[in-house]
Image (tube, rainbow, N blue to C red; front, side, top):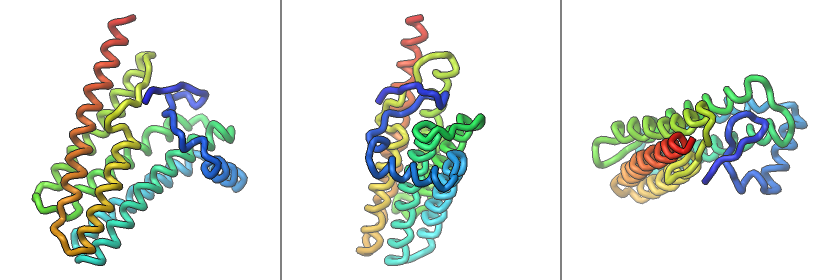
Length: 222
């Protein structure tokens, strides 16, 4: 996945979901209600905290209650992504960009990544090192964004390549959170979250290396 630059100021991911009728309709309705992009960005952080709280509470719950909490966490992750989609659409497609738009486009996103991934580390696992995996995944996720934005600060291309760009890691985490919910509902040992966080951490490390390699190549090509 490559980047494009538009009048938001920062590079922008190419997302097929941005061109769907449902997304365009929802963005128009939010704009008609007077809702600003920055408010939607902050709402995304709120949903991230909801997911993290549900992850943490699931460690104290049993079976069906744990399963329900994990479903809430998965929903929180997806609602966070929806906010990430809509804030950009409000700013660009609906012409509601503000002077602080670039700031709110990046910082809440990084906060949401950290909160969700660390929270996921406190969900039940059988391996006993979920917290380490959660913190590691969060650090590496932020590192992928750092390399991308650093490239932009040098006037170079902001690459959104994976394998664990934001959409990829949130899809992976959602998938394994749903798997953990199934485990809890069936009374099975909690293994899914450890596997999911391991994949996110490993994939994010590869993503950092790939983006850094692209950055080095562009610097040398100047």
